[in-house]
Image 1 (spheres, one colour):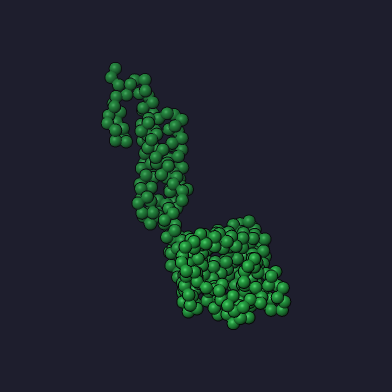
Image 2 (cartoon, rainbow, N blue to C red):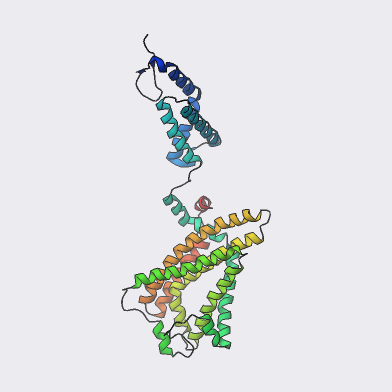
Length: 355
């Protein structure tokens, strides 16, 4: 008896099936024909999603996508258990894999995420922390004032606050010339790359600590901000005693407008989580903390970028650029850039993609 000829739906040529597998081949064809319409529809939806994202998908197809995916996955399971033909099995494996990526996989690649992050996602997350930023800014200013007042009343506080190492001329009683020497520029850029790496490590460590301590209702984060700004207040007091506070402010502004802004955002991000835990509203505490943590995490990714920029500014322009006006120009420009990006730049589409 001549074996029947079975046409394959997957584009393969006609083949002669041996008698001993004739029944299995017929079951495979019947299985395929019963479900072929749903597979084709899923395949068509996936192709359109791969080609143009969700914009090319109708609401009806989008609603049907999860059910079609589960049907294809179930069909794949049956195909494996019943040893259906290799072509059907291979097709279903590829289809289910592609569908899984669209249903459960990451919504966008790294470059697309980075583009959305920089073009609105980061600034949108920062604006979501506006109350925490205001609180952190108040605490930082208060910390600098407290540091100034403490050392103004008792110089011993300077040594308690400022970690002056051996041979550091920035101590009470230092002459104007000694203090000016600490603000001088370098002759060349040799060795400044390693210096930048060290600065980034130190600055990012402070920011991460300010963020990580937020879980304790934000109180440790605020205390860390007070301590760091008290150091700055003590330093401002020291240079003011020799009439050099403007020169110090210019020297610090080169990198400080970026570095202090990053520290401010870190403290605000930690405080945001702490406030969510202390005042969760209608949500359970863990859910409120998780929601706040997602927003704060976006902010902290940007803070890392700010710390890289601050380290480069501190290692190169601050060390190589002389003149109070030039230094203020660099620091002021960076401050304007950050303020404009965070509070004036508001592309709605990019913000929604990264919210």
